[in-house]
Image (tube, rainbow, N blue to C red; front, top):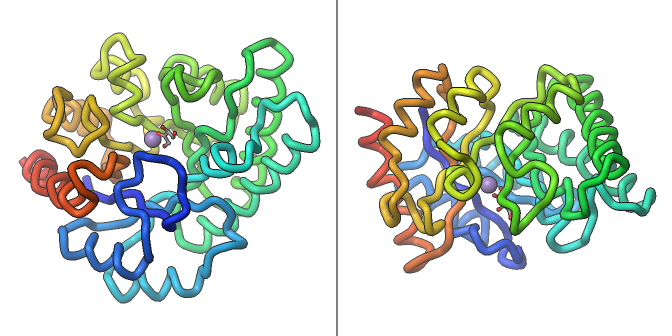
Length: 267
Ligand code: LER
Ligand code: MN
C-alpha cells in the first residue's frame, strides 16, 4: 500500500483538508514528509492550471491517485439528487469535466458529497442512480475509474454505509465504479469496520484515512493495524489517503500521519 494526503487551494471550505494553500508549497511538504502521492480536491477543473499540476507532480516525484469533487456540492450546491433538473445536469457536467481532468492525471474520480443531502425517496434515489450511471458511462468511455464514497449521515443522505454503496453500484452497473472506504465515516456508520471491509472486498477502489476524531491516524482510537491487515486480506494494494483536520497544525498533521502509518503498512 502507498500513502497520499488530500490537498486543495486556500479557498476550500471543507475542513478535513489539512493542506490548503499553494500546490507548490504543499507538494514540497508532502514529498519531504515521505508520502507517495497527493489527492487533489478540486472545485472546478476549469479553475486550476492542469499543466502546472502535472509539472509539480513530476518535479516532486508524486502521483495523484484520486481527485475529490465534493466542493461542487459544499460550495455551489450542485448535486445528483436535486429536485431541480438543471442543477442535476450541471452536477453531471461538472463530474464529466472531473473525469477528463482526473483521467489526464491517471487519477480516479471520487463521487461522494455530489450525491447531495436531499430526503431519500424512490424518485430522488432514481435521479441519483441516473446521474451516476451517466457519469459512469462517460468514465467508461474515457477509461477512467470512479469511486463511490459512503459518507456519514450528518453530511449526506443517500450512501452512508458499505451495504448501501454496494446496492447503488449494482443498480448503476459500471465495473469501473468501485467503493471508496473512509475510516472516519466507517467508525460512525459501520457495525464492524473489519466486516465491512470484507464485504466490500475486491470492489475497494480507494481508501481515506483519518482517526476517530478526524485527526491524523494515531490521534484517536481507530485500530489501523487491523484495518490495514483486513485491506491486505481483501487484496487492496492502493493508496491510504489522509483526509484529516489540520490539527494541531497542518504540517504536524501531515507528518504524524506518515510517522504512524508507514510502519503499519510496511509491517
Ligand atoms: C469526502 O471525502 C468526505 O469524506 C466528506 O466528509 C466530505 O465532507
Ligand atoms: Mn472521505
